[in-house]
Structures are given as structure tokens and as C-alpha cells.
Length: 334
Ligand code: PMV
Image (cartoon, rainbow, N blue to C red; front, side):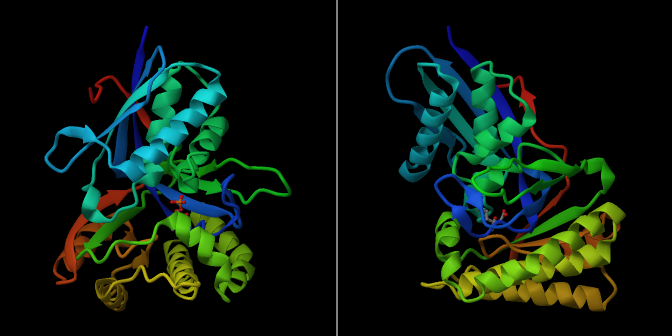
């Protein structure tokens, strides 16, 4: 008998970023990271566990709105993770999977965190395996997307670095209700295809600034933890903007260099600085892409979004904010 489950899991935006791994195969990060789980940007995944042999079936929602075969590179990552979860669970059979994102696939928003969190949780549910949150986080990480380990829970989440051979799972630092922070995502005119974060982690240690960033991180992590605990927005904002710039310095000085920023990215960064000069508290952070996440308080959300939308550099914005984490849904994708 087959069992089917659907899970919606949100994306997250890192305040202190995972960049570089001690062991990329096992996804053991060089440094701890802290993120905010989002709400409006999510992936939804339906997984059906089927008896018998045969290949997994992997579909996603294409641009015309229909479910279609997922592109080979994505399907291959999904297939490997399904094989891993099947081995871990000791079950036989195969899986039928469909996945979709709440944001347009071509928007350049990293969907691996939400996608692999949703896939992992839906697969566990289809296998009727109820495991503790810490283990769910570990299993999501084994997809190869470290940030997926933070997307299995809501609010503010820290994923420690791990010590020695030990692997450490992510844990919630504070629930979403602790602090209503918003994230206005400025989608900029899309540039050339981006280098994957996996490749970025691989190249990071070749940058002369890799070690420098790591040396600054303990202080930065302490500042972010403290600012979150005290709900000190100005303090948090200054640190996360500096951190994002550092990550991109490492990327740009890796061998070969990776330029995620586009001219439009710089235009948005300048606009965020102008907002602050005009008294609108807003701070920018960027993941491995050209889009800019502008973090602000609820009262300035609309002003931030309107000012961003007025820029030629910005195609559109997504008004997002801190969220409560994944949910299981009754309605399936197929
Ligand atoms: O989880 P990955 O392998 O896609 O790497 C995430 C990299 C960043 O988004 C840039 C930083 C982070 O911690 O989310």
C-alpha cells in the first residue's frame, strides 16, 4: 500500500552565513550560521512511497503551471537524497515526488533550503517515520544543502559548526513570535547563470580573506545573538550587512572568482544606504545571488518596498518576514 504526504517548508535568510565546509561531502560547515526562517517564500513537496523496484519519479511545477519532469541536474540531486533517505530508513520501494515553489523559479531566489527541507519532511511523513526535530534537521542537511538544516524549524535558527568529528544539528534560538522582523526581497534584473553555492563552498578556502572572515566571526556571532535576544535592530542590521559584504568579498577573491553581484545589486545597496540617511531603518543582506534581502521592522516595510520598487534596478519585490516553519498539508500536488 502506498502512502503519500505533503509538506510546505519555508526558505530562510542567513544573518551569519554558511560559507565553506570542513567536509563538503558530509556537509560539515567551517563556521556556525544564524538565519531567520521566512514565511511567504516556500517550497511544497508531495512524496508518495510506492512498493516495488524501479526509478523514482520526480516532477516539478514548470513555468506554464503544469507538473512536468524536473530538469536533470535538480532531479539527480533529489534522486540521491531519496536514495539516502530510503537507505537510512531501511525501507524498500521507490518514491514519486512533485515539488513547487511559491516564488518564480527564474527569480534567482535560492530554493534549495526550502526545497530540500520540504522533500526531507514529506519523505519522512510518507515513510511514517516520526523522528525528533534535531534528526530531521540532520537528515535535511544530508541533501547537500546545509541551509536546508535550518529550514526545518521556524523563527531564528542557529546551525553550529560542529567540533572534531562531531556533526551538530540546527536549533531554534528564538521563535518567530519573539521578534516580528520583515524581509523585503528586491528581485533584480536577472544576470547570467549563477555559480552554485556548492561550488562557492568548494572555492571559499582559496580566498586570502577566508581566514580573516573566520577570525571576525566569533565576535559577529556574539553580536547577532545578543541583538536578537535584545531585539536591538540597529545593532543587528549593522552586523548582518557587514557580514554579507564579507561573504561576497570572499567569493570575489576566490580562485576562480565568483561575482554574484550585478550592477543592480549595487544600485539596491546604495538605495538602502539612502533610506538610512533619510531615517528609514533598513539593512541589506545577500545570499549566493544578485538579489538583495532588505531587513526592516514592520512599520517601515511598506516604505522600504515602495522605495525599492521605484528603482530601475528592481523588477519586483517580495514582502516576506519571519515565519513559524514547516507545515504538513492535506492537499497533495498529485
Ligand atoms: O545550503 P547551501 O549549500 O545552498 O549554502 C547556503 C549558502 C548561503 O545561502 C550563501 C548562506 C546560508 O547560510 O544560507
